[in-house]
View 1 (cartoon, helix red, strand yellow):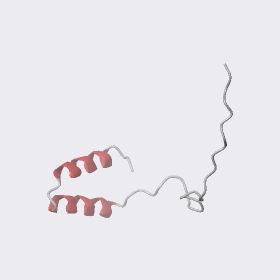
View 2 (cartoon, helix red, strand yellow):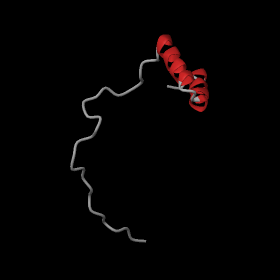
View 3 (cartoon, helix red, strand yellow):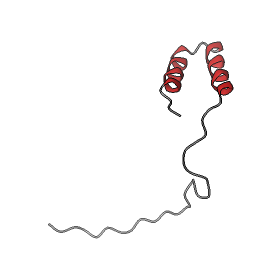
Length: 61
């Protein structure tokens, strides 16, 4: 079986994360978590609040 020689595709622009620090993000502060919870409760967005609580409880970021 022969493989076709495909042309090399090169990016015309630089990467979106060029020069940025990559890696693990800092954890959310407790006051930020509670601020998000309060705003979701005030807006009556129960589904988003439940998902947010699940994410925080499972230690996802």
